[in-house]
Image (tube, rainbow, N blue to C red; front, side, top):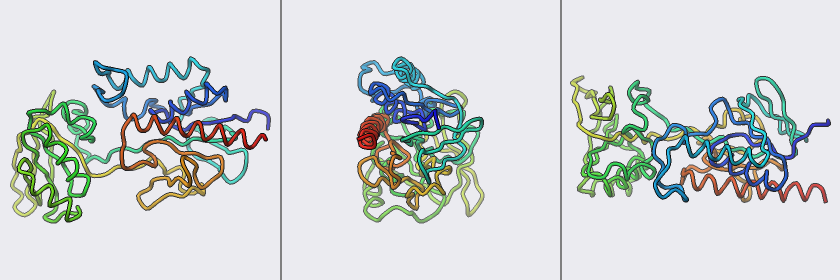
Amino acid sequence: MSDVKNVVIIGSGPAGLTAALYSARAELKPVVIAGLKPGGQLTETTEVENFPGFPEGIQGPELMEKMLAQVKRFGTEVVSENVVSVDFSKKPLAIATDTQTFYSKAVIIATGADANWLGLDNEQKLRGKGVSACATCDGFFFRGKEVVVIGGGDSAMEEANFLTKFATQVTIVHRRAEFKASKIMLKRAQDNPKIKFITDVTVVDVIGTDRVEGVKVKHNDTGAEENISCQGYFAAIGHTPATSIFKNSGLEINDMGYIVPKQFTETSIPGVFVAGDVHDHRYRQAVTAAGEGCKAALDAEKYLQAQES
């Protein structure tokens, strides 16, 4: 097999592109399979103010364009296709897209995770215009405003508490009367004077044309509808890691669908490494994903050196 790559990186968000940057500078000639929509979740955000090096902030798509240009400058091959299957059962490792199969000595998985949404039309239309799924990313923009948090688990309570640093009022909206959140997290939210609860309701719509102006809910017991005035809408109903193509690959994947590292960024399969939100369900930040991309590239480089010695 003549054309075996040193490193193939699956994913083109901050983790994947940082892995590509370090791999390219190590002269490993990496290939990034970027998907049909390169750039990851940051391409769907507006202002990014918490990524180091941009004191005035930067638009999410612009940041990813700069990262993509940087990796190309050092010779990274970028393929705008989706991975449809992998075969990690033998060496070299095989990664298939719709049109071709790549063979590689090492693979870095950086496919990320997508926030879960309710599936409302306006929920998507107003993304970045008051609709968010990350309080730590976007909470600052809601200083002095009223916001709602959708969800009933620990993440919803944590997001709500965090948002009280900025918002004048936070309303937790939950479809059931009971909460999945742990007692300690629920009590922390209940004890916060800035947080109130509306339970046993179904969110019908996000109100607003150019910006979020409110949320329409329907009470499950009576069917009566109510509008909740707010300027921010935060979905806190979990994330789905992009691991479906790895389900039968031999990789260790936990009950939530996240890839489990064995040691550092190494997975349960030698030569396969992981970085970013596809395994990290705790931090989910662009800067932590980028750091993990760096670590995965360095680990992959050491692995390749060991194979040659």
